[in-house]
Image 1 (cartoon, rainbow, N blue to C red):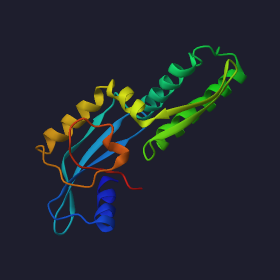
Image 2 (image 1 turned 180 degrees about the vertical axis):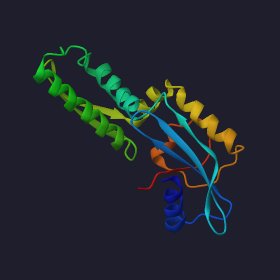
Image 3 (image 1 turned 45 degrees about the horizontal axis):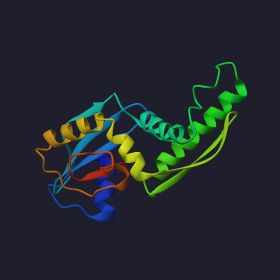
Image 4 (image 1 turned 120 degrees about the horizontal axis):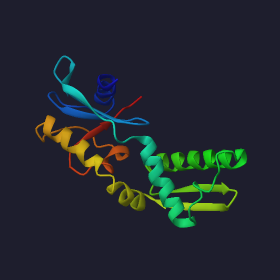
Length: 178
């Protein structure tokens, strides 16, 4: 998949020979980082892909939920496991948090719809607040350092707004273009 993503990037936006692109795949429970180099005739992996198993999309969703609960109070721990209506409302709240996280990858603000038994309303989340919350998850810095070390600190590529706000070391990133 990373090679296909970089091939597509090269065909759509252009990518010079010997350019190295970091493909950062944020999965549900982990982050996979693969470096791909474009050569005159092919696309080659640079080293072995790295996986950060301690952080993924679920954690990012949780960061949005923490911002929501910071605004309206704790609603998620108030739902008892046997409360089917409350559990359904919590699943919907988590889905709204996930949608807000995805919206923040392209917009400056996103709204989380809250329809819990104990609270109702809309909470606006800003990208700035999300980034500050993410800044507390220092595992992202580890990912950036792994990439920087593997690539010798010299990555070339296209910067993706979907990934740049997660990284604390400056370099180019190509997100997976599925």
